[in-house]
Image 1 (spheres, helix red, strand yellow):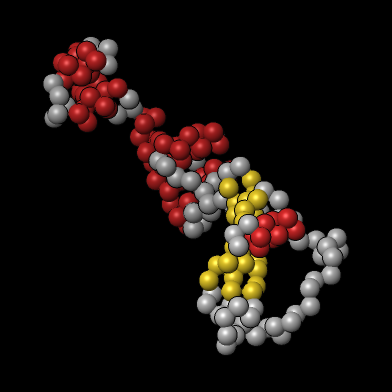
Image 2 (spheres, rainbow, N blue to C red; image 1 turned 120 degrees about the horizontal axis):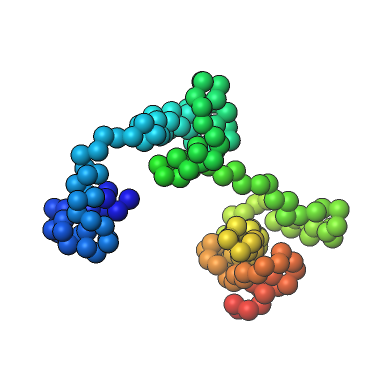
Length: 179
C-alpha cells in the first residue's frame, strides 16, 4: 500500500522524501517497482472481474454469499471472506432491501372518523376543509413519524409535527402548536 501511494504521488513529490515520510527504504521501493506481479495478485484481479460480472448480472442485488456460490459453481477456488474482501476493495456493494413495516394495527385502533368530504378534495372557498396525514421516515436511529395538516383550498401547510411515536399526540401537536 505504501509503495502504491509513492508511485501515485511521485510526480508531485520527490521519491526520496515520500520514502522518508512513509518510513520505507528507497531501495525497497525500487525493488517493488521491478518485481513482477504475484500469482495471488493476478488471481485477485481475475476474481474481482468475475465478482463484478455476477454483481452486474444480478442487477446489484447479490452480496458476497451468493456471488461466492456462483464463483464456486464456475469452478473457482475461493473462500467467502476473500470474496467479501475483494468486493469491499472494489467498492462493490449489494442493494439492501428494506423490510416492510406495519404502521397501523386496525384491530387495536379506534373507529376512523366519518368521511365528511366524501373524497372530494377540491373546495371553492378558503378555510372550509383541513386534512391531515402521517407518514414515517426511516433514519439511522429508528423510525421518525411526521404529521402534516393542510388547508385544502390553498394547499398550504397549517401545521406539522415530528415524533418517535405514531400516536394521537403527534397529530394533536401538528394541529395546535403551529396555529
